[in-house]
Amino acid sequence: MTARTPPVPVAPAPALLQATFEAAGEGMLLCAEAGHTVLLANAAARRLVPGTSPGEAVGAPFPGPGADSFRCEHEGRSLYGMRRALDGGHYAWFIRDETEQTRHIAHTEFLAEAGWRLSASLHVGRVMRTTVELAAARIADTAMVVLPPRRHRSGWIRLLPGRAVEEGTLPERLLADVPGLTEALDGFPPIPSRWLDPAQAPGWLLPADLGPVGALLVTPLPGNAEPAGALILARHGASRGFRDEDEALARVFAARAGAAISAATLYQEQADTADVLKADLLPPELPVIDGFELAGSHQLRIGGDFYDVFGPAGDSTDTIIALGDVCGTGPEAAVLTGKVRQTLRALRLVRAEPEAILRVLNDVLLQAGRRSRFVTMVVGSVRRVEQGRVRLELATGGHPAPLVLRGDGHVEEVPAKGALIGVVPLTDIRPAAVELAPGELCLLYSDGLTEARGGPSGREQFGEQRLRRALGDCAGMPGAAVVERLSQIVSDWLHGNQSDDIAMLAVRAPARTPLSLRGGGVPEQSPYLIAARRGDRRLRARS
Image (cartoon, rainbow, N blue to C red):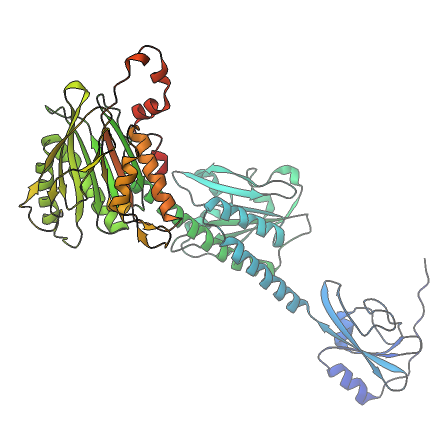
């Protein structure tokens, strides 16, 4: 063993100088250049650097000769020292305890990091994962988040030392195995963090192979008006525990994590509700009906345009088609869209005439008393007639007239007229009938198609004339191919610009199969005929 150097005898300091040193708030050492020996050390210096006393050589944590300052961890404290040269071969060290300041800076940086990481996602699972990752990295060795029970089960996520994140659910009855956990999940009355005896931890909380647990802490995760869950923290090692400042940091962190989990949960609930409502607003899968083809395309913000197809019902053998445009967008338009579609479904059961359907629908909307919201619509009945032809009877209410594509590429407008639906009592509806020869097509569309702004200037409307030319170039194509081609042309016209809702519904009389191909199997494999049979199934992915 190396023998300790005996202290150098030091002459007593004058009483006034000694009193001044002792009264100083920060640690002070007066040292001699010769031998770097401590001459005077006040009480603050002796507290910050135990073992420092007059006559002792200047040692750790003080650096060697030539250094003017230092910053280090010593005896569990963060120290900063500054050296000043004095006359007469002396110098002084001024020592400041920066432990609280350093801890405060570290906590502030941690909470700032936690804030932006927790707010980076509105997915409940990701927010819970981020919570346990942050807590296990900065506050504890093990972190676990337990959610309030739903349908008698609680979701949880846990991060253990040296392992991947685990997650699962547990029965509600097991929550009582952890003292204070049920109260933290109930959230009322507000409770503080609760220290637990590690011996009280059930087997499902911490695996036995982790070794001894020094401390357990259960902290509530406060949410928005209701608890978001509970945070369980553990430190491993028989002698390790949580300090008061650790608990305070855990509570502040838990408040932020609880707010993030609560926001993500609320968003998930709203998204689930929106999905349920949206499912009833999306266009239906078009049925496959013998005698004619149906194809549709729907590009929209929920609540605007829609189309529907209703198969034969009751004594009627006709198929009813409808395409409409509700005034405005957003939730109010979505509500009106749902009301209109439900009314159409009900009317289909008792009426088959398009004109009568429009009149009754107009009366229903007028009785609702909301004339600031109106609907434009085309309603038609479709049936197969002799020689493979298809007959449509169409009635419109303030909507663009349907277009008919003839076999030679000529495009005609159906001469149906009518006023807006839901504004005034309908006194003038002029329906029209049209027949489609094999291979010909009738297109119902919303005004978002012709009003799409783009082109070279980015502000020019696509217009009805361009639509007619584009439709004329589709002569001979199946209905699915026609709506796909028109969708692509309009998309190219927009050049990525925002557009109004766009809906299209096409009815086509199937083309006759050439005699030279009958029985050869080629038409059955033709992609055009396959697309025609399937209607709009390939296009529904665009909705």
